[in-house]
Length: 113
Length: 115
Image (cartoon, rainbow over all chains, first blue to last red):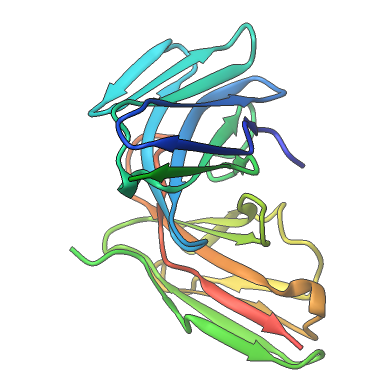
């Protein structure tokens, strides 16, 4: 079953611009995580935001969480060509097992040099 | 240190055959997870181990799929009587002990192709 859904499905920007990706989910969560995936292989964890947090920063990344709207956004500032990848949000559903991360379909980001 | 490793990186098999996919988690990580990812989709949860036991196997699609972790470290995902629809990238991840709902560290995956 799909919980998270990213928007847009694809995003193309120029180097130096900011990229914003959104994620909506359906049921109450314990936390929401963002992952990056290059070339359809292993995922890299970017940031985890807990349900009682509203905003988190990590380097050029800023994540917000609005539990009333069941949505999150990932902002990448001053993008670089190396940021080209697919970005996924993933949720730990409240009442679910801690191991069961439910992923969305992802946003494919292309940063042109 | 070494990350999660998965072998083989690619596996091509024929419909009806049996396959085993191996995952070596990060040393000291007690939790281990299996996901599979089809083209253009996000990873889909299969099973989660805490130590040697399967804490949640609700994602296994049917009884052709089975996973073990006998010593609480390496895990093997076993697929019997493979079908073309099993073709996907199978991802393994692990997490350190302590805390709950932690980030997961993923391996590079095994690309399974069933002909």
